[in-house]
Length: 255
Image 1 (cartoon, rainbow, N blue to C red):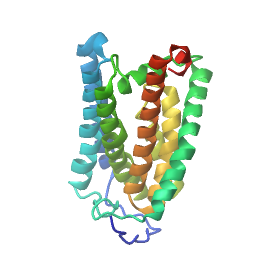
Image 2 (tube, helix red, strand yellow; image 1 turned 60 degrees about the vertical axis):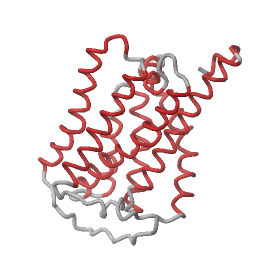
Image 3 (cartoon, one colour; image 1 turned 180 degrees about the vertical axis):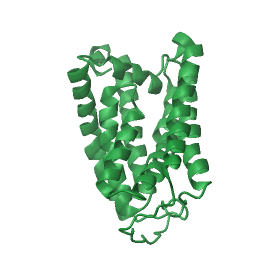
């Protein structure tokens, strides 16, 4: 990818959007994603720990979050792919070093914060364990690993960054200062993972970081790389720990 010059952001917000646009984003993104998950979960019953169920949830993420950003945002002229640095791609190779450094820093911070919040508010890690079934369903094997890495490690980060940074953050920045936009968009990103309080807290952290990076670089590619690398590394570690437990049962505390 070649560098695409960063245009200075005006101090005066441009109000291309209105309050209804935010409502549309939230209803089509959050609302439909949540509704689809509830409906499928109801009919799936006790089989929600299967790979097929996980793939359906991942697909809903792409359709409702990524689809909302592209159709209701870009398609309606509320922001453009060029503005968010997606196409033509806005990229500097020096940003790769920044992304790697942030991933190395974020992973242990997010993991520690998630566990701490769960213990402080719930006294256990039950919701984290339930969430882990999405990325490592019962009978997980190399197929599960490959499918999960593709969706959670690559496609879902792209979809969520388009929605939360491309659509939501851009809407907020059209009318609000940087830190207001950063905190609100990060809070919404955290709430998008509301099935676990620990994940809400850890997602808020990466939401803040990615919003600031997006603000600075004006390129959606940088938060996508950070998000994708962070998710991919987490998945690899989860499956690696599981493999080690199978080889050496005495290491069951890792799982």
